[in-house]
Image (cartoon, rainbow, N blue to C red; front, top):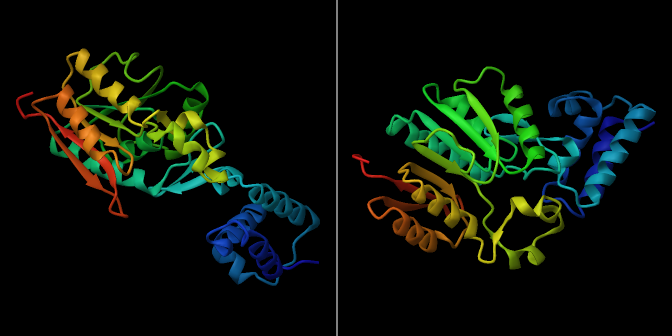
Length: 283
């Protein structure tokens, strides 16, 4: 019968064809099949797998080998200190969005925010991250997808007792919002339509409507800015943007809010990633 050590080696060899970190992914899949932590795989490496465990590992590995993102295979993603539930109805949260949440927490604290809107919440990662760190705000988190909101509600339950209350709503951008936010945080789709064909199979396994923002990729963010402007609101914004969209979207922000200060911040790779729009103090 197969030992844990042998199963790790076999899974790693198979996953080396598609995974950037085949040993890590092998351990994650094996740990999921056994219900073990990664450290237990090392400490009990001589333990033999049952037939059912081998069957489960084989199924998980086959699913990953098909190009399905490992987060979907496992049904979870470690992000911002949480184990978030994810499935094929939502985008897998990225490390760059942790920067977005950190920046939003900083700005919310600085301006003493009372109400935050998370537009396009998806799996609820941003809302959960904000709710875990901020205690004096109310958070409205919305999405156009009912399936995505079901995932977001599940992740809020996984958080347990949140520091801030979160209310979910269904609808297009800010259309259903009943209360005026003083801070809007959003990771809206920002890839251009033409980018789809160049994406790898893992990314194309994710819902395209959560990735593609229009012909140039900036359309949804521009529409958000314009809709907020038309309502006469003047909130601050923290928005995730594409790696080369800083100038175009900064200009769009200034067009919508001439008195505001728009600042582009970089990600770990030095690319445009966060657009912070700060309204004047008297606004």
